[in-house]
Image (cartoon, rainbow, N blue to C red):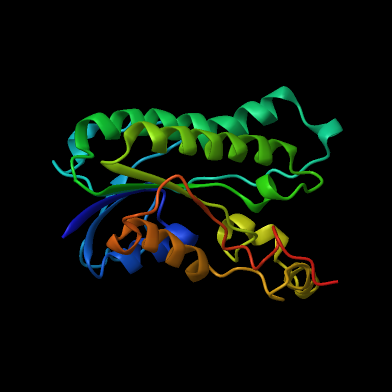
Amino acid sequence: MKNILLIGGSYGIGRTLAEMLSAHSRVIVASRTWEGVLPPNISYVKFDASTDKLDPAVLPERLDGFAYLPGSINLKPFRSLQEKDFEDALRLNFTNMVAILQTVLPRRAASDAASVVLFSSVAVAQGMPFHTAVAAAKGAVEGFALALAAEVAPKIRVNVIAPSLTDSPLAQKFLDSDAKRERSATRHPMQRFGQTRDVADAAAFLLGDRSLWMTGQVLRPDGGLSTLRTT
């Protein structure tokens, strides 16, 4: 069985991904909380990606997959943002991820077909008002992933998923009324916003053996928002 580490996986996309992967892999979820009983093949490590340093001792000797799921959606007009807003977005979405990868890759990514999956946002490919902080941070993720993929090939694959708005606790304030849900759905060419399974399916694909010839790519499960105009 594969050993896969998820940083953040207690709810939303991460929880769906963890449960999906556990059918055929051993999954280590490192996150602040885990509610409920742990399903078979899932182990939990209490870990706050914003403050903690990952202890390599909690990891198995061989690690086949890694995904970093923490993220933020801090939408404000540029004129209202402070320098700290950009620093916070960059720290959570990018620099903390880099620090964890520097711990994981040299010591535990020993598989011959290891896969790293990082998360970006539709806001990098499509300019959107009020997204300057998150787009800057996620843009750093995409550039970093491309360079890292070139550096660690062929032993390790590095890919990115850049979803649009997905029905998860992180996006709750954007989908907390019927009017908001309808507006969000109609913005997308597919006429609906994302479900956690839509994004988790893409991540599971990249962490599995069906994507062995894919690296340095950005998958966009975004309902067509980044590339299509239907009106």
